[in-house]
Length: 249
Image (cartoon, rainbow, N blue to C red; front, side, top):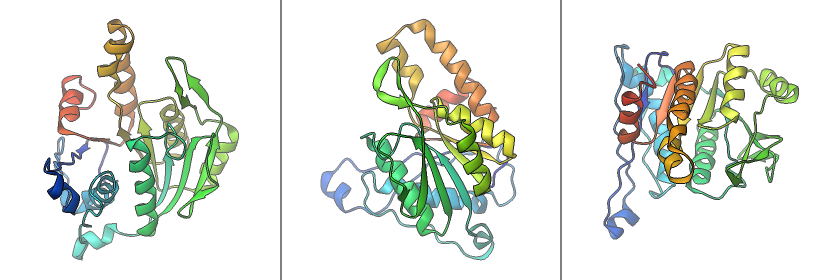
């Protein structure tokens, strides 16, 4: 969250294929590579992001990922933050590993003392989750996959709620429709924007629709992620695809 717009961090969990080891291991390894990483003490700057991501991914298969200890200079970056999280589809109503990832992300942010509000699709949302206020945005079914609700999340009500919250950072899931709303609000409020990429849509397009739609999808992804201050992707393979497609510099 402290890196500049010319950087990207790639986090890739690695897990044992041995079932007994998988069940008892409480560690997660990460591949963290920096694009043009000339920032002084970059390890200190990214430690907070890695710590939260490790714990979130840990609950997706590794029950307890160990926290990275903060001391000395790293402690300077451990102060509580105000995080506005835009997630689509809802991590409360849509059943998937994605749900586990974001629920644990919210949980661990709150346990670390951060203030959090969550903007997501309106169906089945609680009023709060682990002390984080949840704001439902009117949604509509995805034209190609009706089980996935989409929402722009750019109503005056949501803009007002986020503005009153005064976030230090906006974190949006990508790709989707809601990420456009998050981008607009981040620019409107002059707040740094992190995008975490989760569904590799260009790979799925030829399987379910038309191959000629792949390049337009990459163009949308380039537009979104070049506008973000920081991009997170879940694997080294996707980071290579991003570099090959010139999504980031």
